[in-house]
Length: 424
View 1 (tube, helix red, strand yellow):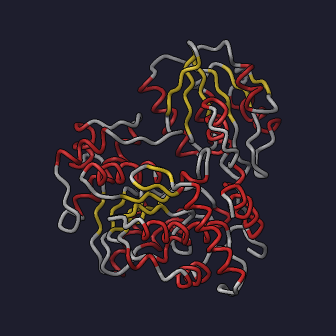
View 2 (tube, rainbow, N blue to C red):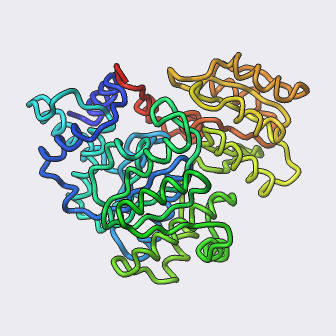
View 3 (tube, one colour):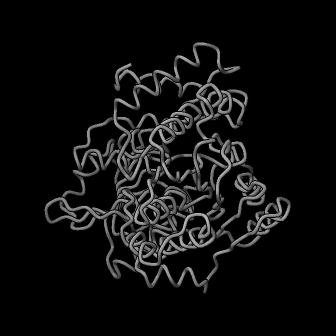
């Protein structure tokens, strides 16, 4: 397959939805020679901050001279963002070759049933990182942990950033159930690092005790939190200092296996890049702030970061959200921080209707001007005269905006679409 043919084929796998379970991924990996056995991993799960924590870890170990693979999802503009080595995207030719091999194995009956996009992508990543002889792979879960395709690996450390309300239809209707799913990445002999709090922390603590592994908890007043704050963190917001502290704690836990100097640790924190997370762009004299906050905790962190980084300023807001998120709570967190709102659909079958979203903003702040736009370009046009614009509510929305603002032109956001498989 060519690259474009590979992308088309991968997108077609989306019809199989999201199917929790490890068997198909194990079958695909076995057919590829179990490349995960030739690699070392740090496995990262959690509700918010997974990607940023992965970015901090990748940067630190790269600054320490390691050859570092990075596997994350969703992507913003191009699917190739999901597979990176030393922050270089996988070449189109390599992705096409790996997709061709994966299709051949599936057509040969390697798996007992259809494979999902995420299962196939996960094994493609394993193959590529093994081929490239990565020293370490920073390995982000897709959804949950226990039954996530990424959980076929045995890492050097397991990291659980935090636990909040998200994907309740798949992970469970209580924080304890969600925490139990994320704690499913904990394995015998593998230390655990977490920033979770409250009842969710107790679930993680119990899981670590069952596996008889050390648990490192990063809490307020923690020495690694102070180190991250003092070293300086490239990503804005207090929540990013917490994510950086999780990375610092993980590096210290693994110091005997993967030593990192204090200089490399600090340089890595200061040199981390992670697009779409409190990212400031300029369009002429206009400032555009893009943030992928997609649930209530993310919206709360964004609101706090706005007050800290832009005190007294009230941007215009372009908002688009998915219907299966906590819309009311997200809207409540943001409505008091902005001067006007333009609601826009997200390029997803799960997009919240813009009329519904507009109603929620009007109920949260009756005096707030609210208008509707049928597309991101229309919303950007409506706010063209605004000096400061915030665009948030979904990483899908941020990705579409980035593509239009930067001229990326990949048009691959549809590969982020997923739904529970039939019968789930």
